[in-house]
Amino acid sequence: MDPPAPTLQKSLYLWSVVGVVLLVQVGGDLTINIARNRIATQSSRYFNDNNNWKASITIDVNYQSCSNTKKETNPWWRVDLLKKYRVSSVNITNRGDETFSRINAAEIRIGNSLENHGTNNPKCDIISRIPAETTQNFSCYEMEGQYVSIHIPGIKTILSLCDMEVYGILNDSIKGNCSSTTSLPHDEYHFVDQKKTWTEAQSYCRQIYTDLATIDNTEDLNRLMETGNSGFEAAWIGLKKDKTQGKWQWSDLSNCSFRKWDVRQPYNLNMNQECVEIRMKKFWHDRNCDEIKPFFCHHDQVILIDENKTWWDAQTYCRQHHKDLVSVTSEKVQRWVEAKAKRASTPHVWLGLRYTCTLNIWFWVSGDPTCYHKWAPGNGISVEECGGTGVGRTGAIQRDGLQQWVGLNDTEQLNFICSI
Image 1: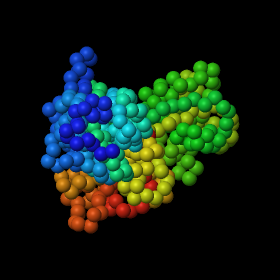
Image 2 (image 1 turned 120 degrees about the horizontal axis):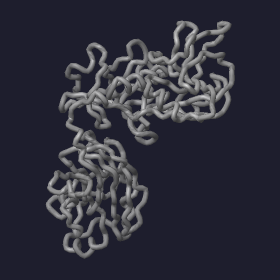
Image 3 (image 1 turned 45 degrees about the vertical axis):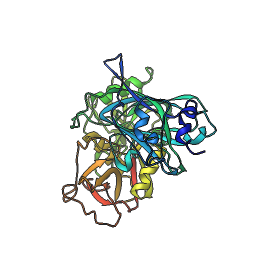
């Protein structure tokens, strides 16, 4: 059923309600509506000459009126909060008539990008089903964003919104400038109390987690030891000597700059001690790789997908199966991405980097600030060729060499890296 005629609106919408009200908690206990008097827009209006269906109705705290789009494919609604917030949860109350299933498959997206009307921002959740006249809560885990959008992808339908509650806190620390500490969260360490050779342990970690543990600094070392069983004497970590180059290298092929050797180590007894164990006092020993012992794995925040896809298809895959195409916002994230890219089967690997011809800037589609750069010479510094071909410019990392970033046509088929 299409939206009721304006004369029936008040009586019917007392019991058929879906809509948007956005709230923020400031100073710990004060709750205000941060959407009121903000800027709302939508893909279309059900009647162009009728104010009863306009986008701003959704945020006017009048539950008897609702915004409505036309019946169209991919309808969307969006509010600009004018500042960046960390959104913790969203409450949506569904309408009560026979069309209550219309909200099914709608996506809640929060972020700082206006690409594709904001519907390309990171996904908080998908509304699989809300029973009629029922309120459902969706946790967004403090997602950062200035824009909150609701859209129904791939379906020709009407998007009707009357009331939605969004809770979060104003992110005073976000000023639009870059921070030297911007990075993905720490990777997670896991102690596996099964005795295996170094190679068997490596296979296990790559199948269940990401890889054998990598330790880059004292902080990593302390976090790893906190996960260990207090009874273990020694356990494998991901360090091994590269026979061809004669240097120590982590299992993910990254170089080893931090070391915690015990006295008179590495010893290399009988010239066959090429794998490294860690002991209870945090010191490292080289051992024969065929010895069996427990081991430490780590689970990264990024993953290489060894499939060839266009940039758009890669983005869709990441958002369906993980979080998004990776944003490289610090040197540490760059090193993680470099280690993944080395295993790629294509000479370049897609990142979540895209160029807008409207503003002539590169941006991360996740909405992260462009704080960190590693462009190859001649890339990322000049106005890109936009033309009228419909082919966009997107960013990738080199698999080999200095592993710098390059701008490529989004139609190329490459491996890609997702954040997880």
